[in-house]
Amino acid sequence: MDSLLSRPETAEPLSLYGREAVKEELRRAIAAGSTEPETLIGAARESLSRRFAPTVVRVVNGTGVLLHTNLGRSPLAEGARDAIARVAAGYSTVEYEPATGHRGKRQDHVRGAARALFGAEEALVVNNNASAVYLALTALARGRAVLVSRGELVAIGGSFKIPEILEASGAFLREVGTTNRTTADDYRRALSADTALLLTVHPSNYEIRGYAISPEPSEIAAVAREAGIPWVHDQGTGCVVSLDEFGVSGERTVTNCLADGADLVTFSGDKLFGGPQAGFAVGRASLLSKLAEHPVARVVRPDKLALAGIAATLTAWKTGRWRDFPLYRAAAAPIEALEARAERIRSSMAGSAFAIEIVPSFAVFGGGTSPEKKFASRALAVAREGLSADELTLRLRSGTPPVIARVEAGRALLDLRTILPEEDVVVERALKEV
Ligand SMILES: *Cc1c(COP(=O)(O)O)cnc(C)c1O
Image (cartoon, rainbow, N blue to C red):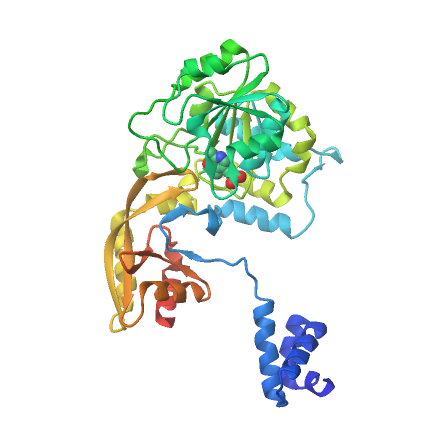
């Protein structure tokens, strides 16, 4: 062992992984049977680099889904990235007021700007939107009934199910109407002395069509007002501006929802808002003070990095720089620009074993913006003799960095809309490596 550790080839692994880990892997290599020092050190190096390779790494998103929950949702704006890096490197004012030298409030970094951006009386930032919904339910409805339309008892992603969150919060679910039809009178009939609030949920990942109705926002607001209970709306996406210009219609902004009469609106920070993982609750100050003072608020509080990122993202929205966010740049990229990029990648691969075609494609915002709302895009359809589309996509995602494609009609598709322009060279390199 000593002679192995003192060989020049071991110097680099020692400096990268430390003595203990290197010894452990050398022992394992020895136990596997070899006696040749080069072989032993080579085997140890290989398993060390595998063992300590980071697993949360950047990937190239060729799926066409802009807010892909499995791929980390929104890339951050430049200002947010800088703010997070600065705060991460040292101490910070997360709960400190330099002016007075006294303890400061964590929420003060985001409250004012969030109130101004969303036109809300008050705002609170927590760990994620599921936390915001849970906190609202437990602080406002524990032990009491919550009205939810049967058409909105939804599951979002693998683990956010409205009935389960409700049950965990200690509130009781009072189902209203039917899956496809719920009216304001259905809500009225479901009211009782025990009703704490009315909850509506943005239909994030499904649409009910055909023989279907749901009340207008003004009707829901009227039911809640007459009954003297709050209307809590889980808006989900954190939409700040209309998405009409991207060809996606009907997505209500958070400000719209408040203007419709919702008393509390909850949403994610890392979807259309374009920030790091966080959850917002905005609306009436009297309700938000109940949320802020509840012990669960401490359980779901945001960390300093998320706060720094959210604060910088709020500033970018408020100063009109949202069009520079990677998310909105990607959404707004003209088809001709996507086509030109696709053409450049394709011509760089000329003479290779790949058959590459540029095909029309559809991108979606994702992350709770209805999957039905597709907008035009362009993709590279890549095929290679002797390699199935599944094998090809496997190889692409096994590279460094992984390039994530989708398979459609037996071909691997790389959608240019979700690939950042500076990543085109990475895609080229990945294809060449395959
Ligand atoms: C995304 C979403 C959630 C979950 O939000 P997280 O930030 O992932 O916790 C809840 N409700 C709706 C309507 C959503 O769109």
